[in-house]
Image 1 (cartoon, rainbow, N blue to C red):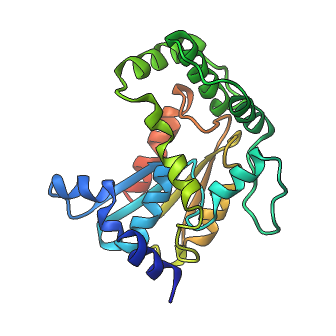
Image 2 (cartoon, rainbow, N blue to C red):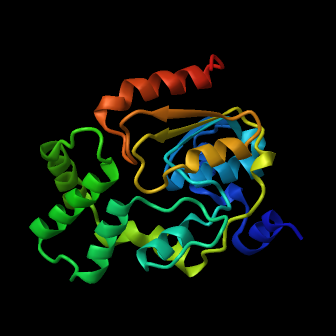
Length: 236
């Protein structure tokens, strides 16, 4: 039995994924999928299991499906060695930041929680481009005050910890959609993962964005938009 079959039996098909359900709700038979970070894993899964639903796939700041990224990050945070053949680990500043969070008491007051959120955004932003702390504060204040449950942000991490082996392995060669993989030159969480994705998907292109980290700051919006529009129009 292949790992993709195990996925379907134990966890359900990709047709149950939120992206596909949103497409169904809007009456879309297929769509151009542009997916960031964990969304990139879902995009890869849908492109594998539901190829007829994906016109093009754009994966930004993500890890290869089946690569065990969650285990790599867990080992890095615990100070454990990575086995041979593992994905590249996160940057030292990423590890130091989350180790500090793990060692400290969780924030309680609104001001403390927002400061933690800004600090996380700063780390994910990377070290190349200037970090606009005022803009980050405005964003995180809005996120904090509109959120019904701030703790829900870690649900996908808890799910990954519960079953770190849940991803189908060795299936990216099944992706038929034209694929563009985008990674920042200063990616702190998944450095080098973009090239691995692009190498595993037939015909995929890889685009490195100078200065970009894991987030999508205003400085790179135009470059990203041009590349994605060219890709979805078939001009890449």
